[in-house]
Amino acid sequence: MPKKPLLPASNLKRMIGFVREFSSNQLHLLLNNMQKMKRILITGAAGFLGSHLCDRFINEGYHVIGMDNLITGDLKNIEHLFKLEHFEFYHHDITKFVHIPGKLDYILHFASPASPIDYLKIPIQTLKVGSLGTHNLLGLARVKKARILIASTSEVYGDPLVHPQTEEYYGNVNTIGPRGVYDEAKRFQESITMAYHTFHGVETRIVRIFNTYGPRMRLNDGRVIPAFIGQAIRGEDLTIFGDGMQTRSFCYVDDQVEGIFRLLHSDYVYPVNIGNPDEITIKDFAEEIIKLTGTSQKVVYHPLPINDPLQRQPDTTKAKELLGWEAKVNRAEGMKITYDYFKSLSKEELSKEEHKDFSKYIF
Ligand code: NAD
Image (cartoon, rainbow, N blue to C red; front, side, top):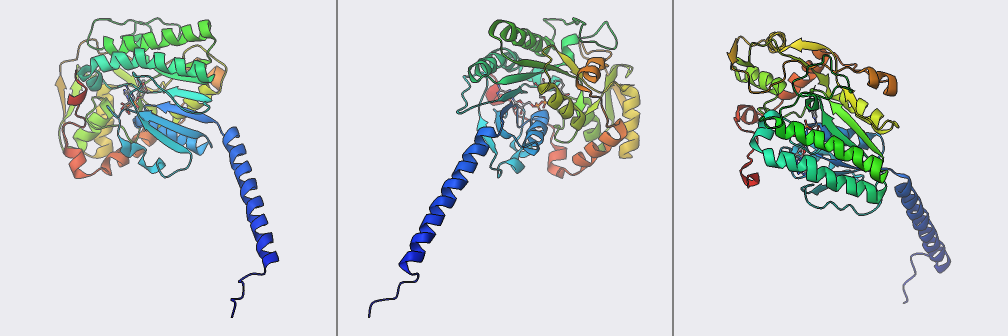
């Protein structure tokens, strides 16, 4: 006996038609959304700031393309993003030619060793990423007609003779000192960025970032906050370099990311300081860490490294006037979140003396 069809032929035809129509509509919608969705390339995506920027732009509905060679960064910082449809990652050294298929609306160039220990260990790579790397990305921005924002630094002011530092101050940098590799790479980065703007008409933005902190900073990278917290958690004395009277102003990462987000979407092409002007001496800051962590350790003093800046405080008038931005998170709040992050790390991670092996990059 012939088998009865599961569905009458007419129903089956209607269903096939419906599926076809449904898929083509869906496809159309998807393509439409993809066209409308802004695509942003973030270099240094696996680093401290880069990873927070990836989070922010994903949350704002962008398609985020992260790029990093992992020289100082860690995939752990972005592994939560890998499952998302609108995140992709390229393991790539940006000092080599950079290609991204498809359209690109924005580039955030954040790849660079950023802590004194890192750039003293890998000085040539630091110079190359600021110069060759920036050149590659400006070329990409030009071809794609994308707007590019580059991460500069308060270090362009060197050991400043003007206080607080305004964007008009030209800086006081020792080109051949140990920190010169970072400071001069960033100064070159600003110059070539302005040249691409004036000569090629590329849409550029420059943020001068002052000391920023928060979760995902790397322990033992030479920056004072992870250094103090790491020492306190491990039950070691807190090391101050110099007499502790040098000052720093610490900006919580969420504030920094907000400032960068606003600057990218502004029409201002000259450098803008983003940082928290709340200045503190390193000695007082060590006392705050002792209170926060409840450690019974003491403070020990070591000689000040060459060319270590003695004072650091951003003048953020421009950021306020142009972007309506100012830092909102006070140090007590931000440090509490940061301390909780470091406490959550494994014992093994906390006890490591070296958190990065640069041997394969030394050539
Ligand atoms: P980070 O070391 O955590 O991140 C930098 C990232 O860049 C790392 O993931 C690293 O692997 C990647 N990278 C380095 N060279 C690369 C290359 N050639 N190709 C591809 N990827 C490369 O540092 P961070 O604190 O997140 O700093 C990010 C940016 O912000 C840097 O440009 C830094 O100069 C700037 N900045 C940061 C601060 C701060 O307080 N955190 C202050 C001033 C400026």
